[in-house]
Length: 107
Image (cartoon, rainbow, N blue to C red; front, side, top):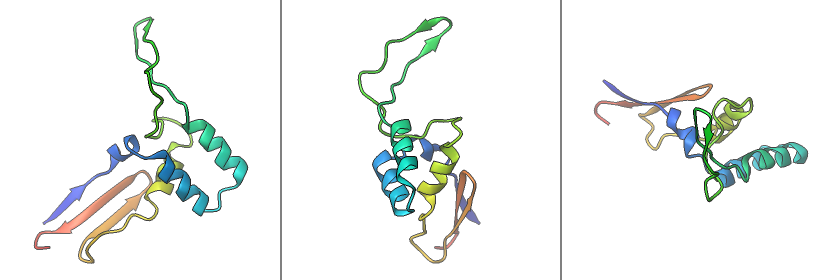
């Protein structure tokens, strides 16, 4: 028996500072890094119902990757690249935007 834990929700809690630190570690070219910083910072959230649009939220979003964006999956893969288990009997399976953690029954 194994426990399967999926990580689809993780795109909503990714800290931009940690992500940018990882991208710097990967030797991302500075012009690309600056574009990503611009893409992620000072984003605001609105709500649209029918033709009515809410006022912007009072604070900027400093976490998450934009769902449906072209670069989102690549940023997520960069974020999970160094993910490891805490115990050698556990297994992590990484594929595209999915991470599964396998934990044996008696661990």
